[in-house]
Length: 110
Image (tube, rainbow, N blue to C red; front, side, top):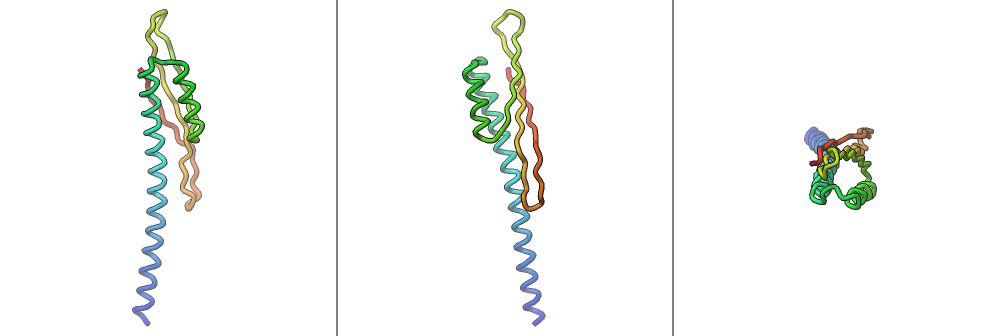
């Protein structure tokens, strides 16, 4: 009888550990996807030499992916040199623990 109880408890706690581990894995995957998307956006804008069409497309793609993308683009004097920054907000969720936070990523664009 004692062996059955120990076996059941071991299985029960193992399942709990797997479920908790999956929650952490899913949350880190959300953060990784957001970071990858931000890197892609900054690369696309930089490679297009700050094309307005590309910036609008990036904002549209961010909206479709569930991100809020804000761009602040500056021009150096009257020259054709641009620079700026990008700020992206995304939801970081761990439903099992009731955690839902809004995280923010920032990147410089040159």
